[in-house]
Every structure is written in structure tokens, then in C-alpha cells.
Image 1: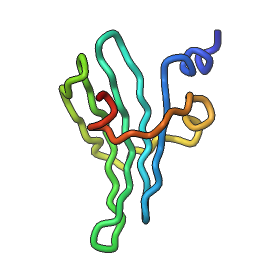
Image 2: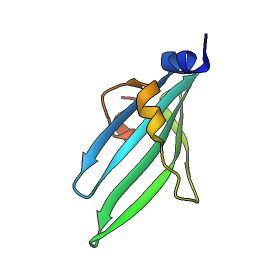
Image 3: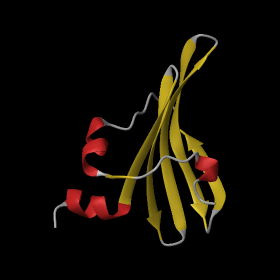
Length: 95
């Protein structure tokens, strides 16, 4: 099995568009942990604000949120190889 095929079975992508921006999530699980990688652009005071990072949940409870220190972005290839799922806000995704 190629790596791309293996990723399709365990990694999911979702996105939402906002006025002046949007948000993308890549979600995957490892045992009782869920990881959500995020890439978000919103407009604040007329200017775009970028944020990216990862949120870690254990047994449905948020354990950590780590922010990227660079202009990280979920790449175009992820949209082609990952399974699409319905977008949910991170705080609502495990309810």
C-alpha cells in the first residue's frame, strides 16, 4: 500500500470559508488521542490575521494547543489525498 493510500484511511480534512478568510483542519487519531492541525485566516481591523497550529485531545478532553511560529499552511496536496469530512469548530469537534 502506498503512503497516500494509508493516509486516506486515517487522516481527514475539512474547511470553512469566512468573509475575508477561512479555516482548514486536518484531523487524525492515535489510540485515545485526537489531533487537529489548523490553518486559519480571519480579518481583524481590516487586515488579515493568520494562525496555525495543533490542538491535542485525550479521551475527548483538550490537553494542549500549540501555535506555529511561522506562516505555516496546510498545502494544496492535502485537499487531493485526504478524506473530506464536515467542518466543525475545534471546540465542538469532539462533542
